[in-house]
Amino acid sequence: MSRQLRTKPAGSGTSLHRAYDTALLDLDGVVYAGGQAIAHAVPSLGAARAAGMHLAYVTNNALRTPDAVAEHLTELGVPAVAGDVITSAQAVARLIAEQVPAGAKVLVIGGEGLRVALRERGLVPVDSADDDPVAVVQGYGGPELPWGRFAEAAYAIARGVPWFASNTDLTIPSARGIAPGNGAAVEVVRIATGAEPQVAGKPLPPMHRETVLRTGAKRPLVVGDRLDTDIEGAFNGDVDSLLVLTGVTDAALLLRAEPKYRPTYVDADLRGLLTGQPEVTAAGDGFRCGQWTARAAADGLELAGDGDGDGGAVLDGLRALCAAAWTHAGEGSCTLDAGKALSRLGL
Image (cartoon, rainbow, N blue to C red):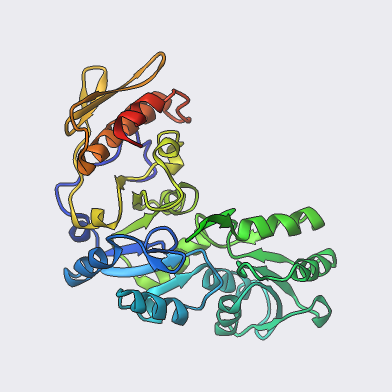
């Protein structure tokens, strides 16, 4: 399981969409990027759903409402309803509601998703520090969020009002590249106030709790593109995870992952839901997966094999390299040079 010291990606003789009852899918960088579906996402999710897997969409992005997210997914060809969507706005609203009186005013620094989630919990969103809020909540508000909103948060927090954040993701993927996320905006308020927010989103327990409460998953599989939110959240929740390489995590970052960031499985994209996962086995002083053997040497990670040119074989090479790197690193982060080995794979 996830809390054991993982030294290699796991294998599965059963396709993942049959081995797990619920996929807890991140959205940005996994299902879509910048509003467009990621390659292979739509048919892969359709096949998993048709085979009986429950699909739940779990996002740290607090800007849009569950209704808006579900509508967007449906437009992309992934049928969904609001109940299929779990957001960090919902998780932080529950966290706030447990600490303030019913009907209390909450200063919102963010978008409509936060407002809807607060109202769902019987709280009243307000826009000014002068509205006597009993809490401040901050979530991603999109690229057009006015700078003055951060000042309102700072004014209220300086008066002793407790501060909450939907999440602290520093970046968010977009169609044009990697953009600043809510975590960057949280840093602005932290610098101005010296305060620390209570955070609800992945990888922290409030988000996992919200997800379990809303999905009722018994054998969940977290599917994400980020080590520091999706995979660490799975680790904290003691559930298995699938990392897809369609978002912010690249192969080099994966090889350096500390134990809490190491996924159970690794695949190129959501097609990995529909397949088993190959075993990584010990081979002399290294590890073998498919046609590749990887080992940790004094001058870096080494890779030998003949799987060039095939996408599946490239992934096997990466899995073998993960085993060599993670085993060498133990409870730390692998510092061995991986440049030549990854170049061999075209990564």
